[in-house]
Length: 415
Image (cartoon, rainbow, N blue to C red; front, side, top):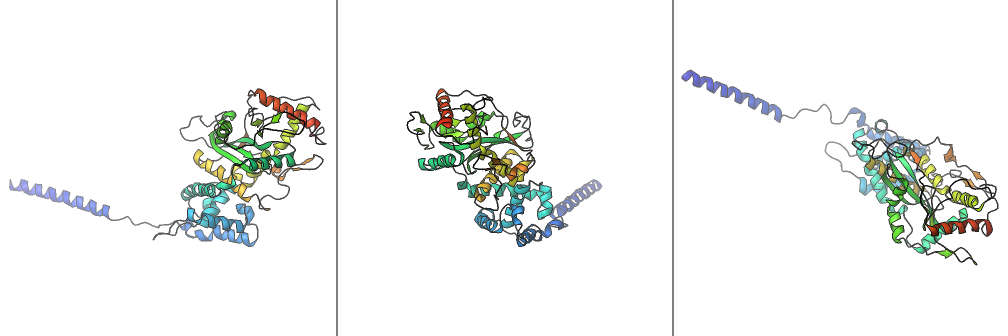
């Protein structure tokens, strides 16, 4: 009996000893070999130092698509939105590094792995930084992409179209592009467009000076192109007449037909009271319908040029994005806001970037056309859509107007 009790006590003691040993090991923190990998220790001497050297050589515009002064201004404006606090273990990635990293990504579309070695910042951190900075840029520059709010502002846009592109009552030109992305996880074919690759849609409205007035990004590629426009707030406000657009007016005396103010679109859109589109098919040379199509195509050149220059400046748009739709949407919106923000900078839009239309009607192709075709930005499909009777009458009136009282001398040669 006594030996049995002793054995039991020894077993309990052994189990207790093992448990205490395990708890002691668990409580001891495993000693890390290092807190920051060696490659990231010299972070401040990589990207920012390289940028300082580029500024010294006056070639920083090619690196970040803006000059040093614009970069510093933008950096100071974003400081409160992007600043992180240092810790006892390591210094936070600075606002300057975050912005420079994002601008380089937008300018090149380089992979996170490639940027990791250039800026000495881990790809895991980069995947967090880029969406954050893009979101901050969109919020900061929100007023640079803005739809006119008064009748006077709309009339100014219209007058610019008439003076520059010889097309009256135009309050903007619109188009959409499919932006190729990787297929989202568990999405099936929800994002596949008519060309059978996953995409989100970039829809935009532009003025006569290649400036974005309105942009909508993120619609799934599988939605029809007419559906893309109808999913925007712009369409909803046009339908409800909430945009304060001027009422219809006659083009000139002695006309009696009142012509509404409208947006120029291509064959992918519907012809109605606020959207003007070309005639379908190939019309007889010299006919008013063919001349009308030439004049409309000429005025819509602003959309094609703006998309071309945008993707030329921000090459992240020239290749399929290996990003989730939400992040890709932020990236595209950030490029548009930066484009408008920098439009006044002569270094950003150098002479000859856009197509140049001479006095005799000749068109000198812009330098952006020398770029290889974009693998990412793809046109929308053309879907036949029924026009309203009133809109058809207005288009016929405009077509006759272009061959009677509002001709341009070269229109019969370039049609």
